Image (cartoon, rainbow, N blue to C red; front, side):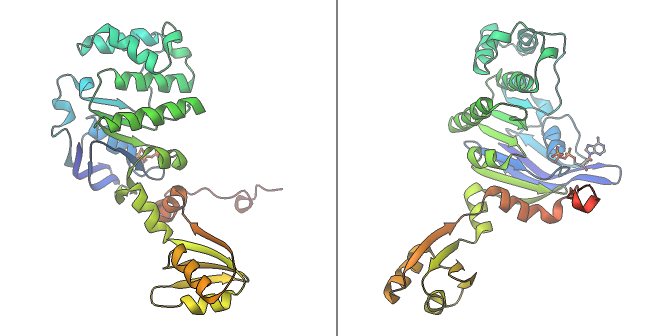
Length: 308
Ligand SMILES: Nc1ncnc2c1ncn2[C@@H]1O[C@H](COP(=O)(O)OP(=O)(O)OP(=O)(O)O)[C@@H](O)[C@H]1O
């Protein structure tokens, strides 16, 4: 369990994290999402005691992180910045961490194998690719077999096999009852990995909800209908809370399910050519929610005069 209460971080006049409240529960993967500069890394750094809150508190398993005598065995973390000495081998790096935390050497070999690094364990970490560095970071986070995992962009730089590995790893660890808090910009990946979402923008919590609920609310359960007589179908299904838009043979209907629409069409003898529930993707729902909270907008090539 990770609990943030009125958590605030200001850098001069900039409020990076603004009275944030959330609870990250065990047993599910919680995705931590937000546009660039939303305050995700700052929040994670405060959870891990690397930054001090200006106001408010954040606890892990009911305590402040700095209060853990051997933090690795309680909380595993991967932050964006690499913290491995480039001249050290992967094995030496993990052995150093294991030694300071009273973790047996055999566990080092276990996590090296788990992360797919056994063959390169004797190589210097400085020569590692971005993906190998990420694997080493994740191996370090897992070293103490912690109950809580905090991972900032864990799939950054990983190949498809690595992405799948992280997905299965995180869902498996959550299923064991651990608390998994993971930030990512890859919406398609989050949609497959997370069951719960905490979405931030400009330092504030914009949503704290299950993935399913978030996407459903954003989608408004629209149904696409292509039929022989859209005018008559619209009249048949009209009623309070039903909204019909569309052109030609195609209608987009909100406020009724596919089954009710299909039944109404059959009753009226209207031929249906298509009846599709339109589910909004996590990406669309996220863009909708965070549109006003995006600080760093990209401009198209045309608008900056870069097109030829
Ligand atoms: N040490 C610092 N000094 C001043 N401002 C900072 C510092 N660290 C972060 N900020 C600012 O705080 C805000 C939140 O930054 P943070 O890195 O937490 O966002 P983020 O959500 O992790 O972004 P990204 O998705 O780009 O990694 C940003 O506007 C950033 O510029």
